[in-house]
Length: 264
Picture 1 (cartoon, rainbow, N blue to C red):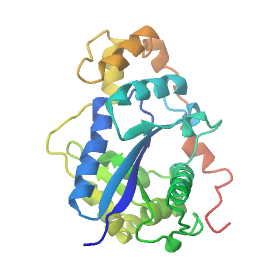
Picture 2: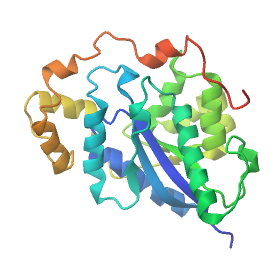
Picture 3: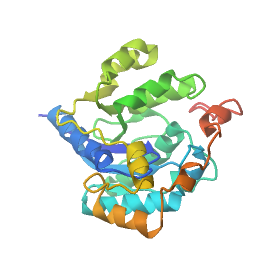
């Protein structure tokens, strides 16, 4: 029986705020990947987006990082990383993945004394080299279809070089999103679709709405996160107006100078 491939899950997003459902994605994904018999999930990373993302109602990164760390205090395998959130501008998902994979591979090489080859060339990886996959909800796959939001070569790299673990939510059909995308369908073996049978429709948008209206969000967020929100008076009517009428940074950045490809 061949050894399982070590794998790290990376979740990127606003986490505005982090919810129990966000954390639940990691548990579901780990169970599914273990059941394939191919992988051993050795870690998980929550990477909140930077303030430069420009999304309406996005509170400061320092608060989103702090809430995520409070929420994950009970986890012995998922951690919060602030590299992406500290960048002066919004960072493309693929760039964040390159950063974390380079760090993961370096740690692996230092720990084993093995050299898996250049981190920029996935063909040099051995079967035991660690992998990094993007963890997301089913709605994430639909973002690939939004005009101007993704560069084609970024979708190719995320799906082909790294891969995705997509957890279904509500009535969304991730299988259809894969089918309708030439790039995703070409890399279907590298995309793992996970079914959530215990329905959980927790939405950070609805959580913020409830908080603005002074309603309870207990059992939707960890108590420590709720306490932090009240302590710093986050998610008010005024905070929701932040970035109102501002175009998302990905839509403006992609029209500027594109990020260098792996071959540059």
